[in-house]
Length: 570
Image 1 (tube, rainbow, N blue to C red):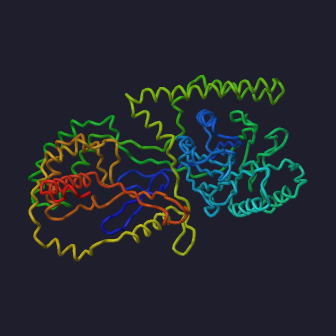
Image 2: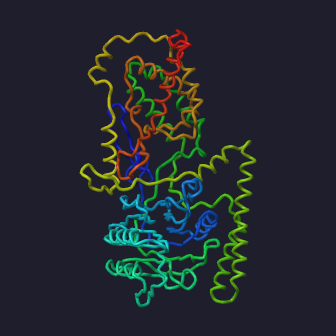
């Protein structure tokens, strides 16, 4: 996701940073970088995530994995409401047209990652490729692939072509279930032709296979491939996910990366002294201080005084990127059962217990997880009548999928990878489709004409009412004035804002802050590398929106009082 500033008078947009952009933030903080020497990773073939999502959340919470690869998710569009894990970016590709298959990659938030190979999005090959940017190298590409046992020659060739393209990068990690049971990895030989073609592709791209233990039955079906063996360390089997017949593979990526943390400053309202803030703002003689000032000059004065007083009375704190959060339904006994399952798997692999005993513990763990989640959701549903906020917060957390803006096509067809380049490209596109109905000269001519008297006044009571009705949980606009502050100081700010609003209406002077916006491009449909498939969503000044509401109410009242719109009109 990209975020920026826009001038909706001239159609020009200048982008700033969000958690994905990691470049610069206007009015607030900056970004930080931390070197990480190793990532803890895990991969498995889930054979349906429908009944294993909860156990995956427990694993991520207890083990702290950074990268999670999954094949055979069996997801389709109906599962989008329950695929998100808070604290992780999700990249996924579902199988189209028939049941089963699908791949997914979870990457811990705070790592600079984006999807690559956008041109293969519509390919029937089940694969996902994500680039994680590095500090000393050109980045590392992590891929997750699933090759069904009955896959034909055409799709096999397409998969090998993708591997050939990805292998051009300096650092490559590929995990997946390739279903080549006839391959002998000790001798790098195979019986079937499709298996031989796969081995030839690995050799041509200098890819090494790192898994040594069987991953399903006695066969090594799930692979971890890399073009640099020193990148991967400690590959081991650590159990299964739910009742899957494929193992969980845990390994370390030993690679120095650039971890980008969001360190934006935010107001700490829990330690705010609003009484002192009200006192500081109430002693200012607004009528005298704003006399003779235009709307822009008056707003600049009000904003400066407000932000200076705010800095003295409301502490700021760093807003860090989210990490993996503990599931709300998670209890201590569930962690104990998960450890018991892992220990039982170890005993079964060493021949100390039977498979039936291991499966019994697995079923018990799965049932306990499902019951804990069901009981929590039942409590939310029954209590929604009295506490809707918790209910809808939980629902939104399940539905929210936050995706970064991937590579975009430039004007000349080149691929843009850098954040600043992508922001400029979207900036140019949004500006090109923005049109002005009237030229600036005609607008200036109209301003020179005498403005007729407006029968409705913008008095302090109206402004105070709108300030008191603000939603304090909304985000501030590009001017940095928070709605919580405006709401708390509704009585003290009603006078200066009413003076500025009146001046703006009479003179046509609109402060620059009210014409700027934080712009977020939202993907609609089609190819994700085409800037034309994104639409801007703007976050504008709270004060400017209040003036718009007041004018709208006045216009509607005028139309109603003078019967401009008849009852027969719709």
